[in-house]
Length: 253
Image 1: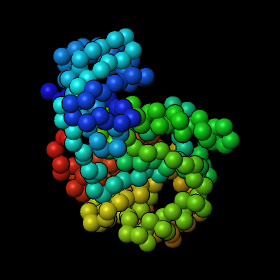
Image 2: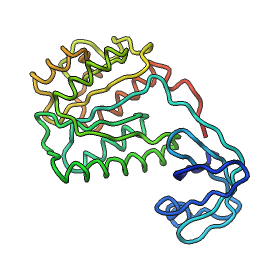
Image 3: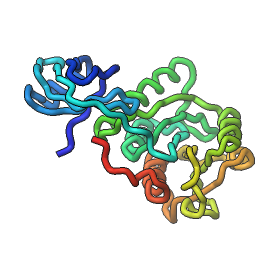
């Protein structure tokens, strides 16, 4: 049976006692009802893991003795999802699904046709919520690494980012229903990193698509179906898992 995973800020050395408190501790002790004698895995969210045995459990947290520690390298190529801001609840769903499918990082994109608009205080609020969703989804899918979440990028900034990343050897892919190339037609297996751009509900505007492709991105389609912005990244990540070596390694827990 795969051990339950929880995150703490820093992992103690083998033989030391780890304290799981705060939101993670409440989830472990009260929601999951983990009790003394049970095994669990603690992670620092950056690839570090520790197998532990619970020695004490209270209402708001628990203490566990570290038995062994190890570190898991990120999958290659790494995939950063550039997600155009979806509306309402689909915003969080996009992050949840893509995290469970293996996204390594997220960048929020304020595309021209986005219904949602993040400005001022909405930027910090939106990014905080995305980070919380990414953390929860990473825990649920037992991921050693919690995806980083940053942004919000304007199209000009995204264009420059693509230019810089492609120059450094990355592959930049823009999902688009009218693309002539399929994702399987693009050589991504040798890239060390991938930028995966997902447009908004209304689609990527023609001038934006032109700017992104001129900067070095390849427009690709996933198949005959038109996907929602909230599910497109997850489907693409599944395809990339098969087309590259990202899914070659066994489970790390």
